[in-house]
Length: 453
Ligand code: SF4
Ligand code: SF4
Image (spheres, rainbow, N blue to C red):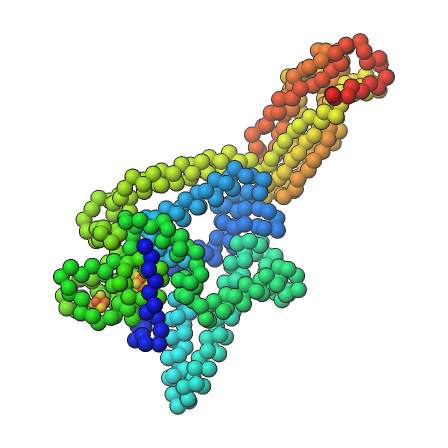
């Protein structure tokens, strides 16, 4: 379905920019908000992966890599969201939300301003010198900008504080420092050399979008049934990707930025005609400006789209439930069955257990254990509550002990209760306590061991 246009090149008329026009204004507002979100997400732990510590931060929750179910639900939710966006809204993400596009367009605007500034300041210098000065100025601004953008980008994977220390110490010796320096260089070259070429030549989302689009996907569409096009080519010169939308709505380079819509409105508006280029739901679909039901208007135009929306809602609900049920302090208790029981020198029966606890929260926590359902039973081997600092994991063995007189021969049932402070709902672990099958067997003071088979 996708076709590639080759309209870029030296033969093209100079590009124009249309600040202040309808879609341009909307897009710049949305892009500014997206830029703030892009910076905000990792720096405030709203969404980032901490590779060194194997954590995943998602809207305030610190998820450990071991929390597979939540991470799986999160990934599935994000993946379906991306696929749904591509299927319903085409490349809306590229034109309005993508950081690469935002920075490419900013670099374009900056470059044009600098060229105008240099031409004004040194009008008598040769063209080569003016180009060189403009490039030097452009690079001098882009270098710190690239360092900042790299800092934000790498913060999605490395704690920002750690990154900050590496940056102020100009760390280019460790693996982390080398990665940071390399990403900065790639970012710098991207905005000096590649910019929107990245979108059409490298970015996988453009290819993915073309695979997911169908006949009802939002496109930018040229429609001229009355042959009103005056051939001014303002739409072509306004296009940041350098393509001619009149050839096809499905060109791989088209990012649905709508600059061509503004351009055509501007020129034909003066002649009392509407733009021949519009957002439309597919080539044969209705223009978004036509009267239609609200759900059609927002893109839910067939059962497939409603099914995708339902799937998204299901995953979002599953994810919310999983996160709300999540406990910041994880406690596990399991029996150590190397021996079923041992008999102490005082005749008490011992069963050995293992406590495994992790503090996934942000504050200190303590864990206290006690038993229930079996009288005269005590815990031995834990000296009071166990303190866990944020991020700590402990593994500790302890004994549950009971006098043989309080036990049934063989299998006894009890619960081990874990109280976690700050307040977390008490957790109960149903366990089995083994006693000698013949209650007269353990003579007082004689140690006996029954091996587990
Ligand atoms: S053809 Fe129009 S919508 Fe597509 S990239 Fe060019 S200006 Fe943007
Ligand atoms: S701006 Fe409109 S009128 Fe001019 S060439 Fe493009 S589609 Fe035709």
